[in-house]
Length: 147
Image (cartoon, rainbow, N blue to C red; front, side):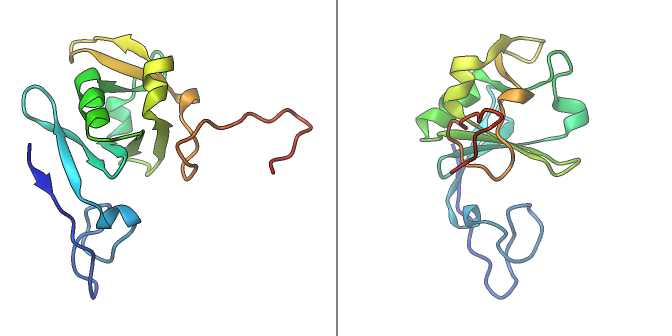
């Protein structure tokens, strides 16, 4: 497995988180990333710090029934072994970032195999809104206020 180190952007050089030239766009730009490959050797994601990052095209990769994002079981296991605690799916079409604790895949995920190997699908309702930390979000009742 090949490890690639991202260098911080200095003076506008280097590549940002989104892969384009420019300044660093996230603290993740300063973290060593490890490419994660499927059984056939194709890179399908990378682990950056404690996050498995998967870039997808929503119209092509999102499951329609049920509405969910699926990740290969082997990729989840490898990411976990590399220290990942969260999964991020970046939809390259609309820029949406979906985030969920990796543990949630094992607890609530649905096992599927639709011709692309064994995967675990996590319903859209099980993902946290972009920008929230990958911890269990507490659901507030109608009259409660977040502290």
